[in-house]
Length: 458
Image (cartoon, rainbow, N blue to C red; front, side, top):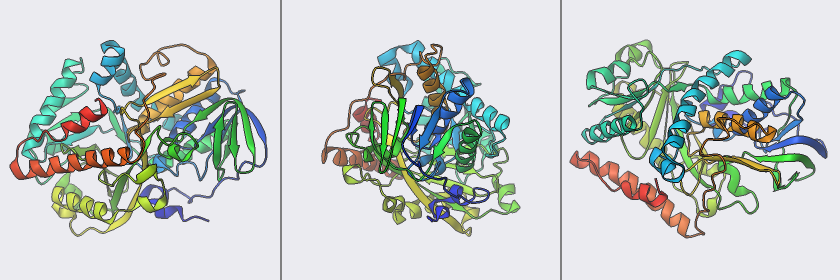
């Protein structure tokens, strides 16, 4: 059996370990068949069964539920959406952009409500997010972001600027020039959430088949290597693994995000750093980092920087980039010098799904019986919950506030053929890294990363 603990802290610390469920035993029929046992598929099944216990729902998962990004992410249940307010408004209007953001604010609390109602011990704690200005160039950019949110009607209750002493009272870093704080985020243990949701779906009467690889999705049928699962609606919930399916290679680009985790840190460390309310943490650099204080007093930190692999390749070999792990450890120690002697107990990574316009989407083609959701660009812990609720409404034919949100039915154009997407994607990653180096050297904001935003239409 696969050593799931080798795929990161979260999968390594699921209570009782991970034992795969049996595969699809033969040809089966369902009302709704879902490909992918991550958050999107599990939330969709959960809300379908909650709305109509009689609906027959079946999930097929190539590995185990939570094996992909749902069990390996940074554990941020945030209200972030990959596309900017401006990009949404250009296409769907200002009110639509605001409605989607308000729905995401509510979604953070909905995830917490479900974990409490269903008894899922996912270490959910809503402590907000601090984006610290850890370099002089960060401060102006983060201040501008806070002001921009204000121009959309989001006030201090949603996001506010903190002076250096206020930011340091939340998380004390080696350098701090202020920060932006939002309460709309919770830290959690992602694999506990995924595995717990799978258990709940089964308890509600849903069928969950693991170790079952889908080789083709067609209207009304999922074909696996040995059997077929037929249904009135087939849901694609495969996120970063979407390019491995026939004819879907250019729908999403699989970008790898990598993480490290320390050993549990002593009380003396936390007395110095604070971080008492488990706020999730990032800073103002262009090449994103993200971190949380775990429930067992580790720092789990991740970041971008791993290359895009030619032809949208997805393989376990891409999970490990020693240079990225070294850089994450360097950043960790530079922000928190007292962690210099701490052991790094886990290093891991995995693919996330990126649409060409950075615009997550959810939808149902009723005529063909095919539904989809994803393209979260790493912001999927809460967004997938909103997707699951929305898909349940769409499938059951219930019109309402969720089905009217602007990401419903959105279609992103496909990525360019190779080698163009390999060249463009890796150049964009290099541009962001170069901008960070320039800002560290000069102390002034760099505009190089703006090229990336223009490239994807943000």
